[in-house]
Length: 275
Image (cartoon, rainbow, N blue to C red; front, side, top):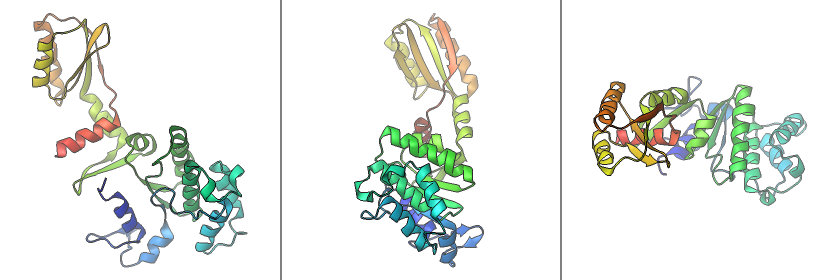
């Protein structure tokens, strides 16, 4: 909260002026030529707030099309397609204020898409949505919008949404970019260094203390049959040091595996390391 996500998106849209820095879209400085940004970008800001509550689903789409200079006749086919794509057919004549939060969110995205720009900016598009609707919105973004060749820039607190939807992630902490990488590569990097060891039976508290001192962040748990030890090894050769500890304690190793990293944990590790 307060990192500046919405402010950054509003600067890109040219709704507010940045205090420093420059913004280029397709090589054009849009601080000097804001109209170029208006032509290239469409956006959904602050969830479902940028739709008109007393207009119906169809009227909202027609209204936003008219702001771009299109007549309802010109975009009739596109409106029908968006209503079908977003599952709003049964609510075509319903005022936006009577739609569920999820449908309002989908209508807001559809209203941004009516402009048919190559760049779509989405500020917290799944905030406040239930699990099912969040899944629907993620599916729409990934399978139906991105497939049309659009660039989608999404900001979110929800790391699962980011992981499931995006190809590339930029993490900003204290005003600095601390990561800019494909999600797949970030996960591969952390997976190489994260291991789970299974020890037959329950280990004593002294081993827990020893592991906590030697390997910061190590987690030990008992599943009823085995002790599970999760540890991050920055140097993969340290795995032999772990095995030596087991040998010295006369512990039987039942199994060892790479841990599939959770993207929330990756995010927290990156931010913690930066601090």
